[in-house]
Length: 140
Length: 140
DNA sequence: AAAAGTAACGATAATCATTGTAATTTATTC
DNA sequence: GAATAAATTACAATGATTATCGTTACTTTT
Image (cartoon, rainbow over all chains, first blue to last red; front, side, top):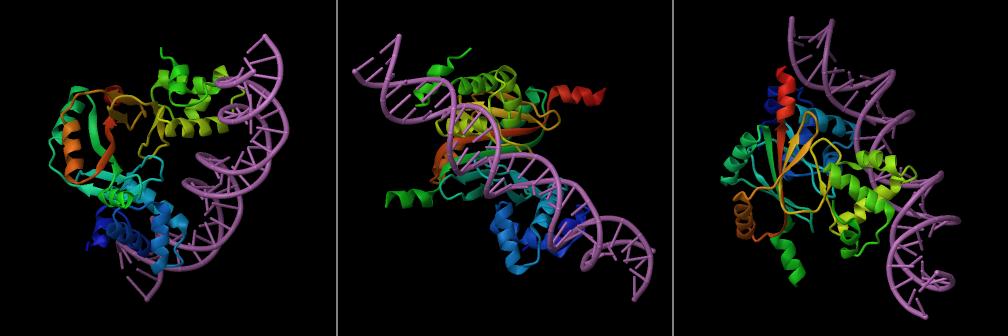
């Protein structure tokens, strides 16, 4: 459980119901696209407008609260900003799993950027394939 | 210069003018989104329809000729399928540079996937930041 | 080289996704 | 608790993508 009120205020945003509901859904579910967030959020707040979700996803993205995860062939997912990690994206069920790993590649990528005189802001590593669960389904 | 005719036929696709023009634009420019491809293509083939580009991007993507590069906050770019590489994405000018590097992270990522029982199809590494050119512009 | 058959193209319509507007409501500050 | 500024809502407007269907073109077979 996180304190979304302070999370929002630290980023200079008003702590509205709507934003808290959106963050709760993303915080609990991990990775959701706009429509999935909307579907979840209206269960607890039926009058919340889809436009509000669009606007808040944008503003919370710009403020550094949320991070967009663009996915091949799908709508982007959104997650709460946290330490660098790798995404395991299942192309069968669409699930996305985070892998926080102190893999050396982090440093290698920093070095690569430096050697190219590229001022690095963000590293994104996505692995696409089939998760263990979907492999079992196909085998049976 | 590549032979787009055989590239298409090897993937079971008819070699039409339109597809060749699309591939030429992507092949020469590297990474373009739908609108950029359209703008370039109609210079040499003004009657080519935007719908044709959409349809062919999809079918050439499914056939393994093209690869989608989803980008945070932008429309996806498309590139011709080639060996694994890293993208350096400038958030100021939008340029995308490929970096073919025999970085060890490749193997580390394979190992990570294996240890998670994740059947890996595709590795995507994108570095977001400011390219050397845009750094110079800001400094002056 | 010509014809047949199949797939792709082009124009437009239809649908889906996203953003803008303006009046109302709400969170924050004093 | 009142004032202020920002956020929300509903809906309109725009933009992006997909579907349709008559026409055109590639490929194969002869």
